[in-house]
Image 1 (cartoon, rainbow, N blue to C red):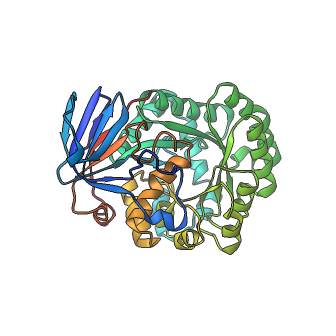
Image 2: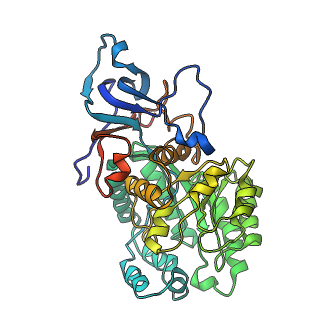
Image 3: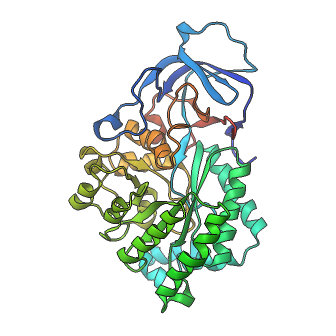
Amino acid sequence: MCATTTSLIFEAMRQLITNIKQLCQVEHAGDPPRNRLAGKDMAILPSIANAWLLVENGRIHSFGEMSTLQEQQADEVINATGKFVMPAWCDSHTHLVFAAPRDEEFVDRIRGLSYEEIARRGGGILNSARKLNAMDESELYDQSLLRLHKVMAQGTGAIEIKSGYGLCLEGELKMLRVIRRLRENAGIPVKASFLAAHAYPVEYRDNKEGYIDLIINEMLPRVAAEGLADYMDVFCEQGFFGIPETERLLEAGWKHGLKPKIHANQLHHSGGVEVGVKHHALSVDHLECVGAEEIGALTGSTTMPTLLPGAAFFLGIQYQPARSIIDAGLPVCLATDYNPGSCPSGNVQLLLSIACTQLKMTPEEAINAVTINGAAAIELEQEMGTIKTGKRANLIITNPIPSLAYIPYDYGNNAVERLILGGSK
């Protein structure tokens, strides 16, 4: 499937995993529902030592301590001695569908150009748009499927993918069709976000109102009619889409049944967090520029703060204040932001390392942020994110490791030995 030592095990009728060193993120029958975790609860990762788990027809059937295991008939028995088992990662913010890397801009940044300066010169998102619109849809799909298999081999068992490199009707539809094909063929849940409001195309640089009208009156109706997207996203930022434009776009998305997800507060205190909360966004993502006002706006809301520290690392900008957000009693989700310009990595384990070392999140907080909270950020909390009877059995089996903390500690290396996929049912 891809060049990796990790195995991807697709659905068997009955799979029994035994001698698990630690079964992490468990939910027992009768426990209060855990749909998302916030504040001090993010430090808690319920686990069972020396455990077993039974998968039947792609679903978690039962689990417990090895001392409780009765004789079971199984099509496959997996001995997990010395290994951890946990829910697969839920990566709730990516731009995985793109035509080509932007390594030349990487060198420009080393030489001192900022992200915004590169964008003004026609680089950045506009660079990706030129390359994508020139690429055949079949080739775009093939390249994207390879990337998806690679991140799956690193433990990703559910993913959100955005459009936004088309910036025209046909380009955006092409991206969304590719995302739909990935959803149909990958074997994991794939959510799609419509992000035509990612940047203004060159031809609309002096007619921004015209581009917003194009999105609202031509693109959105086609996207909705063909059922190509789950969410409406906007890059709410200085130099991109301001508050009035963002509000119009989100309202138009709601009219077509697309819930909001927003790129907010990456480069400035842009007001994106407040507008996201106002319009009941599922999540506000990036949040490098967050202080007391933004935390106050999020308090009491259902909007998930989603941090993308991989982009801050790659761009060399300030990290998100994860500790302030968690200490205020809020939830935190982590996602990779996998894209060709500002974060060319979909490696969730590297993301965990950055979150622990730079955002000062504990390993338990970081893993909660990419399992239970990652699932909630793409409305999969009833299906994934915890080990619970009846949930989809998209599961990680690690290599033999000494502790949970070893996953972010051993940065740059793949701790995932096997990814069990419960199928697309």
